[in-house]
Length: 272
Image 1 (cartoon, helix red, strand yellow):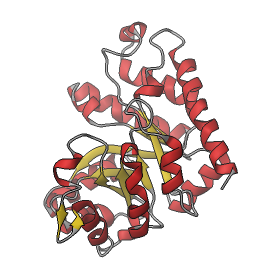
Image 2 (cartoon, one colour):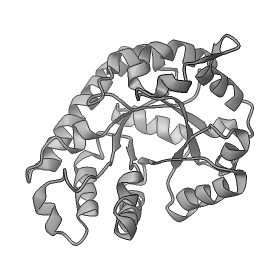
Image 3 (tube, helix red, strand yellow):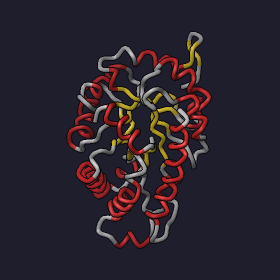
Image 4 (cartoon, one colour):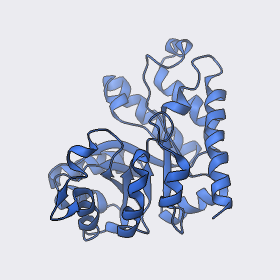
């Protein structure tokens, strides 16, 4: 999917919502445990109920890897269902990969070619040669961790080197990498006060912003500092939507929570 196609979808749906499909069998409605594939059954119901309210889905691969081969099969069925039934949706493999070049190439092939995701999250700690293999894939997007929403982000990301925070060095350096136009960046919603400086460095890039909702991030603050001329934001919500209810009407309740965020986004967009 191209960036222009993503922007067009945002404009049509009046939404820049991304829904995280982080499936925990201990949290899904109990009646689904009788299904042959409860993970996929849960995802399918959530997707069918919310696809018109969001522009992206983001399965965190850890929640599938934890269940072994059955988890991977559920992930494959989920991405195949999305690509076949709702091809306009932007898909994100939240895998946080990043290794030496030949290994990164194999990770990229796994997510971009075999599973046919539109994008994958990566960690930049190992530098250019660990990221550029992902960037080599046409019309695929590499979403690089920049400034995350967890407490440990302050251990390294905001430390200063030569008078500048590490995350700023990362952002500036990444712009020089080959095919850097295929980069997007992860910036936590709980770090909204940093978005002004981030936009000064990468004014045109899309930002994937987790942390709205359950983690305490504020949508209005994120939009105030993070919106650009092409919207430039994907706001992720996972637990606050998919676990809105554990009853048999869970998909309907998930859609209600998604609609609340979509309506708030529509109101924000109407003012821009």
